Length: 227
Image 1 (cartoon, helix red, strand yellow):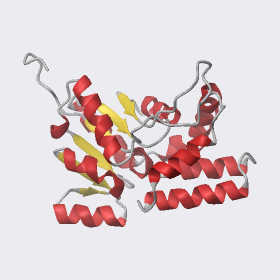
Image 2 (cartoon, rainbow, N blue to C red; image 1 turned 90 degrees about the horizontal axis):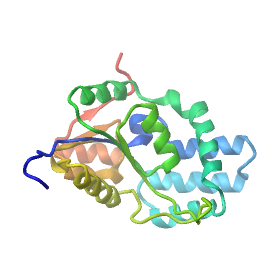
Image 3 (spheres, rainbow, N blue to C red; image 1 turned 60 degrees about the horizontal axis):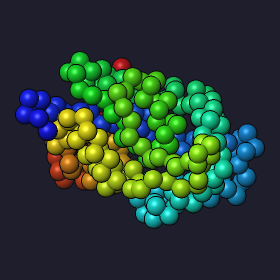
Image 4 (cartoon, rainbow, N blue to C red; image 1 turned 30 degrees about the horizontal axis):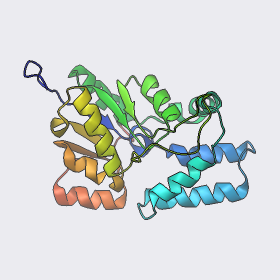
């Protein structure tokens, strides 16, 4: 890195139950079930996996691989169309009040705003564009030459240590000092990323993250009501 350019901090944000108040994956499964595009068995199995995922007590790579495999042969344009419809009907109004204020605070300080999430690239792109974030880091799904999904994901999974891997690579490419940055999340699974940055911020946390934050003296914020 050139000595002429001083690296700056960035602000990284988890999506589900952090920027937004819902788990978008579970909400999407329920949305698809209501429209008859998801069988009851598939919906219940997806709900179980997502519940275990949120509690960080499941082999997430195995669960994710099974979920992504179901989309083999689907075209990216079709998934983007479905995701956009879902986003505007179910997600766009769930941004947490506190999130808007914090995003603006970082904009005022010229901190790059980066979405860092296990969500799909379709959901991540829409969220970043809607709420004016500068970039998004998420799971990526390889396609063939015609744009049809292969039913796999690009390792490492953007989850746990995989988030650190992606954030560090992005920081190096964009002259960002990751160790001086901020990270906002609700999930215990994000502990590796919280431990890397100088300013960990815990938002409406799950029970295990709340306990970890209290032990470490990390700030715990409630974004559900900033009236």
